[in-house]
Image (cartoon, rainbow, N blue to C red; front, side):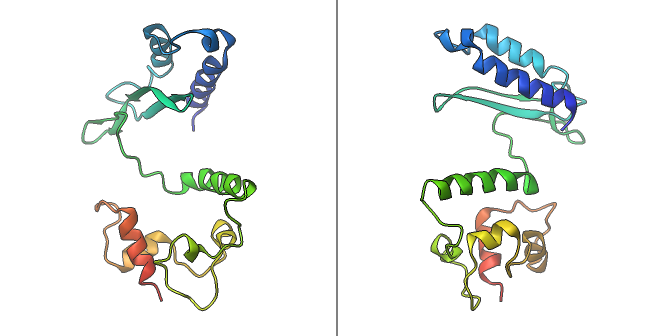
Length: 171
């Protein structure tokens, strides 16, 4: 992430946590939305890769906006509903969510993953959540499985169900 983008995200976070914003009746008035848009205006060009933004306050989405381009070659703009292939970027967020669930006692890192994904075959020994988080189990990498199943990774729209089916056929 470039320094300017990181700085913009931090400014948005500070705006949300400011005492004046907390007291305001409608924190996402046109004025504040315009200030957030100003932070991302450098990205909001037909020649710039961009980002999608969603602001959630008290469990409710209060502002969404896309900035810049999803695909520069095909002139596809980013909207709030643009789907991004986040791949490995999601690992730390998934790990944090799993650790929160473990600290709340809702799961154990030593649970067999088939407790949550019963479609996975029995590989002869349990695969635990801890194994998955540390990449120390016998499951192949998603990309390898999809290539073995003749998916065109960069061209086909691949769903969670497609990946789960490929994983369930792994021997």
